[in-house]
Image (cartoon, rainbow, N blue to C red; front, side, top):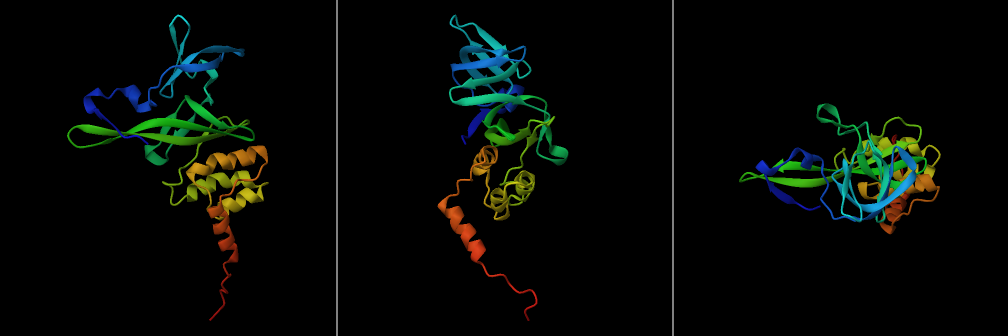
Length: 224
């Protein structure tokens, strides 16, 4: 992740929700009021709540998540998700509706929400950090759910608890959870295996750890 420094006096409210500004790229989008039509345009995602579309005459149109059904920029596909909370407890932050990148779809849709956080620094400077959060939503759910991060949830305990309900019919995926093999970086592989019915692609290191766990002798609790 890049570390950016900006003057406190230059911080704007929209920056708090913004992803990095990028250039216009060829893409397409569908509007809520005309879902059967896909519009070809040059697109730029500004933050997680504004999509800019530019035509051949350089005329620009600003689109919000309420107006856009889905869009694609290059190989990246985006949809909208809302009514989920970031964090928990008194410091949780609700997200009404935002653009999210769709990473996998099927039984459970996996998406990624990106936002910026700031921490105070010395000499009147502020450090900004890009944060990515996995969002999941099944077709019959009214709201989306933000998955807890492994790194910030007691060594992944909350993450494992959040994933376990989806492994009722997948003992192979349940075994990954039981052996604490899942981390933030392989969550997409977990949901791809769930949605496609394929096996989770274990790395050599993961297979070695699982083998060691199985070979560990079971201690006799009644031993003197």
